[in-house]
Length: 292
Picture (cartoon, rainbow, N blue to C red):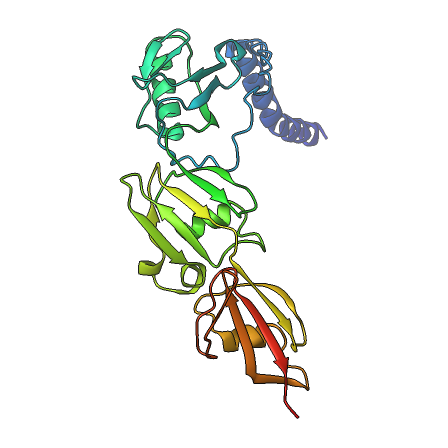
């Protein structure tokens, strides 16, 4: 019986050894590990006010090259004290806060913004400035569009534009516009361009414009037609319009109208006319009745 008790005690002692070892290791780890440091305090984010920069006009492409008399606005994101609107001086410069006088003529708004940001950072004024440049008024590189277009005025040229593109930017021709436009170069050369060829012709029919050029869309030249036609009245003279085409434009002859009794009056005087003669501005065409 005594032997049996010794055996049970030995078994219980053997089973308790892993538990004692684990407890000792836990105490050792607790004793040697340093207490965790307190978590660093969160730094409150400084709110950045929204940009006060005025939106850049839709037609001021970033490729526009600045020049004298242009008005630009320069901003630094989140720094309202830097906001500056200035006219480019005749020497091509503007004055800016902190960095002073800067040459801007010949630069694009995008390139100038990058240069201003770099100079502000290099001077230690801002850590990582984000500069923007908006063109508020164009005065140096533009084409003048006048006459019978929807929106006459100045059209800035920030790249190579063709005549048709400038007219499209000006809203297109009015119904009262002539079927041709006049392009007058800075040097004085004058070109008469067919609007149909501008729209449908080759690149040679649609020349490139340059700063200082003028585009003029004259009022359409007209003729008058009366008598035995289905739609008498006043009509625009199209390119190469003949008397035959004029009769067709007026709806053709009535049932009693006669091609042999077509008269044409020019400057108040009757002139000899054929159906293939070209119609001129102010012409009056009268169609008489057939002889029965």
